[in-house]
Amino acid sequence: MRHTLRRLPARPLAAALMLATLALPPAAARAEAPPVTEDGARALAAALKDGLARWFPKSEGDATELRWTGEPVATPAGDHYEVALPALTAVSDDGTTADIGTIRLTVKPQDGNTHAVTATLPDRVAILDNGKPSATVKLGRQRISALWSGAYETALSMDAELGDLSVTSDRKGKKGKKDESALTVGAITVAGELKPDGSAAAGTPLWSGPGALSISNLRFLDETKKEVLNLGGLTMEGTYTRVDLARADAMQRLTQTHALAGTQPPAAELIPLMQNLMGGASGRVRLSGLTALNPEDGTRLALGQLVLRGSAEDLDKPMASTTFGIESSGLTLEPEVAPKAFMPDKLDVQISTAKLPTASLWRAFADLATLAEAQAAAGEEDEEEGEGEEDEEEGEGEEEADLPDHGADEAAVAAIGNRLMGAMAEVGTELRIDRFVVNTPATSGTVTGAMRMAANSAFGAVGSSTVLLRGLDAATKAMQPKPGKKADESTQNALGVIAMLQAFGQASKDDAGNDVRSYKIDVTETGQFLLNGADMSAMMGMGQPEPEPIQGKKR
Image (tube, rainbow, N blue to C red):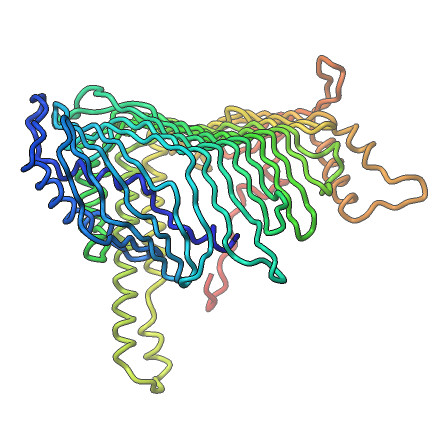
């Protein structure tokens, strides 16, 4: 069953509902909804027949191909069209097939060249492994609707729910017993909406709005019906700001054209479309109530909560900024990999950047992409030449001459990096540790700080940070071996590190009377590395010239 789940087709079935609206004849912006007619139904069916082949090709690297049997059927039904897509089968390279069946749509023309679309998926799908029953997918309830823009070929809003989803094994287990493995999901929901939000420099409208996807009550049972995974919830939330849907549509058309041809879009065409695609985006992923079991060794893991968050702002302006954060709590492992007193029970980190020169970043990205294309093209030429040659001995010098010039590529990458670093130093790009907190029952630590790139400084940057460590004295006491016993090597190493931290830190007490070691770290423009005001540069070997390379040897 585990093998079957890994090979299920990855493409979302709900994407099929998009095809229906692509086939509708375009209407003038802000015009009334076009009427539903027999001619419109025939045009819709014909366009779908062509579109199914164009929009779902098997691209290079895809392990799964979508195959349609028959032709689409569209029928006028009052103010909308009833659509039945051809029977769908997903076929993987390894012999796995999913007999999905017929997806049904309703397509209702709206004003402004938009279309209200609903979809109904088959509630039962058979998975076969080289023709033999492997698994069955069941869908207990569903609701899928969207508002589709014909002008931009994208969903302006989405509201969907798939509930009581299960994947159960149809294989025989060990010793002829039934394989009881199963995956169940309480619900999967998707929601989002984009609304107009100003105009781009070219006059095209911009769009902003939120989106979310959530999965609840996910369980996985192994072949003996033992629970090996339980996930209370997984939520992904995001917001897009000032999205240029005209650019997004052009980029989508470019990538689809090359996918049909089995090629990759050139960087020179793709990257200009990516620039100014959106003003920014933010996202948050929250996982809660996770428990997992490794049946082979009995290891158990539990995690109360894990949150990942990030954002990028002002990507369409000269200076951008980003943030990234991670937060977790309630981590336990059985058997314990460390004393419980030193297992982290809370982690909270947030790092941000500011004053990022967007033009320089895009130039570096474009240069790296162009270099990668050149390397790929050179590799393909070498392969073609190799295919046309028979095995024969060649001189050593000739072999070396045919080798790719990795040194030139490394020099080009270094030049791109140096140019970008110079641009960042010129504007004073900043990296900030807004928050770094690690807590265990016995100890805790916090870090805050910031670094600014500076062209005239000794190290190209200046900055400062403050580190606070609590509980080092208590940790040392707790790690001491029992009388008559000797600490093992790992404990000795840990005690050595703690002793060094105690020696270098400035001792004080917090409000609760706990011992605290503080470390104020500064990197100055002149190249000093200060720890609590003391210059540590010489001790750390900083500021010393690099040794000259030995003649005749490569670095």
